[in-house]
Amino acid sequence: QLHLEAQQQRMRESINDVVREERDLQQRREQLKAEREGLDRETEDINNRRVLLKKERESIEQSDTLVQLTGEIEMNRTKLLQQQGEIEEKQQALVKTGELLNKERDKLIEEQRLIDQENVKIVKMRQQLQEEIDLLEKKKRQIEEEKENN
Image 1 (cartoon, one colour):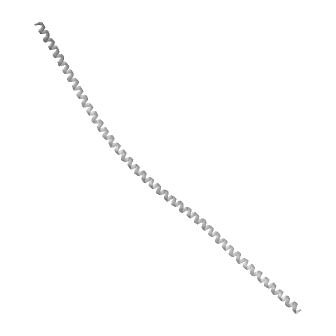
Image 2 (spheres, rainbow, N blue to C red; image 1 turned 60 degrees about the vertical axis):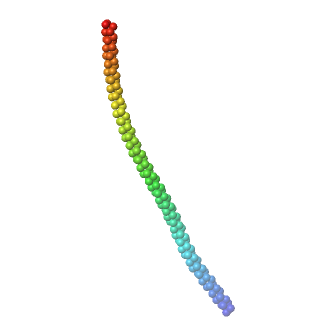
Image 3 (cartoon, rainbow, N blue to C red; image 1 turned 90 degrees about the vertical axis):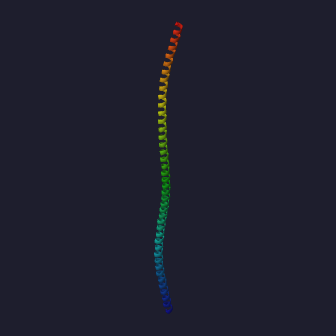
């Protein structure tokens, strides 16, 4: 009987050991579960930070692109202003050339007017000379007629 009681005692201790181990395992499971949940939260945080970093990188790239485009726009604006200046200079040169051509045209018109006046004088002189020639011829004929008559 002592032997049975000792065996029962050992069995009770064995059962208690198993129950204790089970309780320890359950605690360990809960601890691991809590750790896994913590790691899951950390993983989620890391993934969220990755997404934020990716968005930030994209934003920086877009910002860099905008800076580059702004630089190109500014260069184009500078070129356009330079071209506009060149066009204005050419327009001023054309205006001056036009003014010179107008002065030259006015001179030519004045020369033509003077030539026309000279032509009128020449025509008048020719008429006078023709009249004088006609008078002289008339006198010549009269003289010849008088000679014939005499």
